[in-house]
Length: 129
Image (cartoon, rainbow, N blue to C red):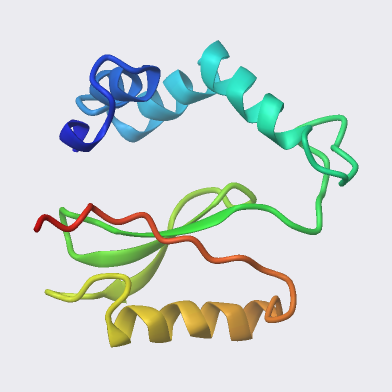
């Protein structure tokens, strides 16, 4: 993964540090990373929206991510408002942008009722060619 990152960048170093750790240890590293927090705060305060005073405050909109596990081939929903990842089932050889992956994300949008207020971003490796 680090070959697509800027070598020795903070993100590259963070990924290298977290890779060998377990889930709880990774979470602790991310929670305690001052540079990551500073970058988040700088971006979060740029817009016109009111910024919550505390990370624990309830908000209408927040970030939800779907990722495919390299270990078990399942699609997971990562949502900071939940206690852990939500398993949406096996994708097999498909990826998140396959017909099956898109159907699961569409189901998420339908079920949560956020069809009129969300943005979608896909992070994928660059195509060589």
